[in-house]
Length: 319
Image (cartoon, rainbow, N blue to C red; front, side, top):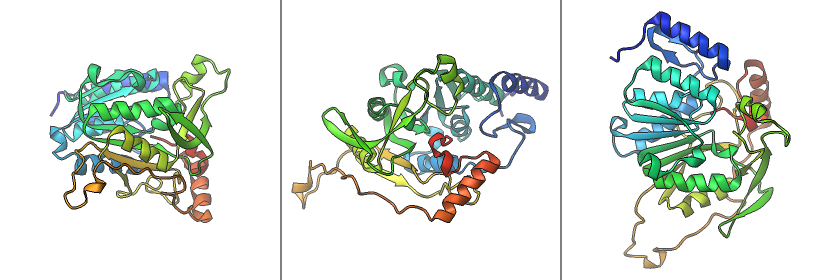
């Protein structure tokens, strides 16, 4: 059991951080029965999905893994992996989120939990080394197309085994972008006003760090990007299900969890013509039927009532 701080000290510092940087997004348990939001009992099913995927696909126990959590927000995912025994590093650019993550690190007193404040676009294998699992949740859709493309490639370089990307996607190919001579489809999304100040951008915790627009790739384009980065297989995760934090309705119909595995391409003996071939998914494929309108309405109403991200708020979908 780590040598955790006294209860009164955790309460005091939690209050100080909350007063200075605002209410917490998620309700995280701290030592001595303290919770960052008072124990609201809202199940974080996206967290369950991502940790389960890492556990199942990493190829070894999480306690033997080094895990990188990009855009870690307040540090819940990173802390969860550390509590599972992994050597976990969280990266967060915003000061408000980083200070909350550092409070988790201090309160939990785990030697295998650490956070750094840095722009994920500056993360490289040369500076930070390799990781068994790289997690990118709630981040990719906040980046311009080229930055998102480059980040996928950086994650591939840093991963020894798997990369887990949970992100919004464009449900229709509204426009195209060309990167490294290849065409990808998706939609632009406005993150900030063109004249927004640096302070306004910093205060908008559910938007990008600095860019005024971002690009959401379609499902086929994202899968193609991951394939071209070098992942030998790419999966989309459906179980454990993440619908709306255990509540009725859907959170986001335009979001998915994609797992890229960094393996060695298999060489077929009985079909050598397949060796080395690369087939891209065309636009219009990998599309799913829209959810029933009643579920969309229920999710929207629920999101407005309880502050959780319903379909109408999917552009600001939580981590």
